Each structure stands twice: as structure tokens, then as C-alpha cells.
Length: 387
Image (cartoon, rainbow, N blue to C red):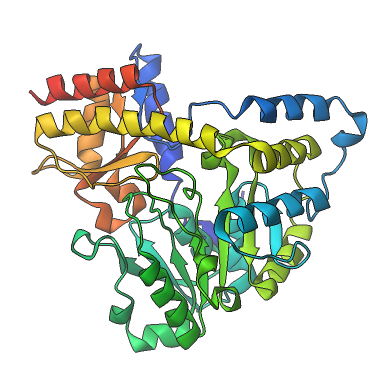
């Protein structure tokens, strides 16, 4: 059986590997506490679930969902961006609903990158930025996210010969996995940089509503002139705890949205209509109070984790956003070895920093996707195992 050559350099998805290791441990009878994958454990707002249920009763809603999403869905995204960020969007040309934002992130290089083109990708960063580029024959240039720079890329350090062939620059703030946030001045700098070097600036922004302590993450599209050079991906997975529903959006530059639309009409047949209706409810009726309460839950969970890290003398990045803690692994052991040993020895599963790139070495990512009591149990196991 012939397997395509393009898969030879495509690594297995890291969380699929972690999942298999977890299942193996569970089959041995281990009570594994999973703090690796960023899948919210909390439910969506009740009105969203009720809308899904009602809409699914309509027999007309079980056909193809439509390539472009219902007009009301696109309109709901337009209203959300206007209300939340003060960004005006054309629902016909600057908004494209996605079957989860990961789908759009993966397809962007297929629409905008030719073989030999360079894509500027953060390291550490979401693995899909890399693998989608590799599959279309693009070349990666990794921009290091270092603690000394606040986990922001040093754009001026990118060589001129690389920029001459570069087509896309990926950014992601609030950041996964480092939990770093970017000042608005940096986003402005990035837009100017993209314009100067004829780059598409792709901003992945799924944690825009996962923040606390008064921090309000911006949209890249709030930067004047960003619509000329940028698109932004957003997702209901983290915002409304709808990870398994698979619904997101890409907004911004009309030419890029048009290219992605042309691609998607040849790839899929749209989002289930009942999910579209539920998304409209989420975007249109879920108030700030629900988000504040949900984010207070993450804040309390983070405190439980960081208190234990303090007791163990392990450093971590201070942050008021995302649903992760980016922490230093103990010295003298690789991230991969440490997380493997912790799973085997304590039944606690974390993500090694190297799952997100070589610059993640020395770190682990802890996902805040368990109740406080379960997190405290996990951290207690970790502490006892360390002793």
C-alpha cells in the first residue's frame, strides 16, 4: 500500500501520542488526572444547549449546513466583533465560519503558501502552524519566544533573505502555550512589519475571552490598517466551552477570506445547522456576567496550581489569561522525560514544553481543565512524587 511522500516528514500529533500513553496507563488501573490537553471541562451556557436541542428537532436542519454559514451566523460574528472590539466587518466578504478554528488554521497555508515560500512560526507554538505549512511544501522559519523578551518574537532579528521569501507571519496572543500577553504597541508594530514586508499577518485569538484581574485581550484588527494585511481566527471552544461542537471563525482581509472560502467550498459542506443556531445564541445572548463567573473559576484553579508550584520551588510565568500554566520543569531532566516519569510515577499527565517546539525545552504546560479539588489532588501527587 503506497503512502504519500508528504507524510514522511509529518510527525504524529503530539496530543494523540499523549492520549495513547494515558489510555495505556488507565488500562493498568491508574487513575490518571489529565492536565495535558486544553479541552474545557465546564459546560456551555444553558441557553446554548437548549437552542441546540430545539434546533435539532427541526427536520429541515439535518441537511448540509451551507458553505458560508447562515447569514444570521455571520451577522452574529459581525455584531460580536463590533460590540467587543469596536471592529466593523462586512458579513459577506470579511467573515467565514469554520468547523473549529483549527480547521481554518490548517487550511490557511493551502490557500496562501506555495512550495518554497517561507512561513514565520512562533517557537514554542501551536503545532498546527507548522504541520500545515510542511504539507503544502512551505518552509518554516521559527521565531523564538524567549522569557527575556516577554515571549514576544523579535521581528527585527529575522534575516532579510528569509523575509524576502516569507508570506505569512503567525502570532497568537494571549499565547498558547506560554500564557504571555502582548501589549497593543507590539500588535501595532507587527501590523507595520507585515505591511513593510508584504506579509499576511495571521493572528490566532481563541483566548480573547479567557482572562481575569481586569485584563481585556484585544483583537489584532483593532490596530489601524490591520484589515489591509491581517486575518484573525477565533473560536467558541474556549470562549463558550464548546470545544467538541467544532465551530469558529476567521475574519479580516477580504482577499484572504475569499481564498479560504474558495478552498472550503471544495473541502467541506459547512457546519451542522443546529450548531450554527446554538452559536448565534452564544454570541448574541450570553452576557458578560457568565464569562466573568467562568473566568473566576479558571483564576481559582490557577491559584491552586501555582500555590503548589511555589511550595515545590518551581518557576512559572505570571499571567491573567488562557487556561494554562507555563512552568519550569525541574532542572537536570528534559521536559519529555519529566512528564513521562510524572505520568508513570504519579498518574498526572502534563504536556512537555517540547510538544510546542524546541524552545519549549525546560518547560511544561499545565491545563486548568479539572475542578479545584482534582487539581489539588494532582499537585499533591506531584509534590509527594518529587519528595
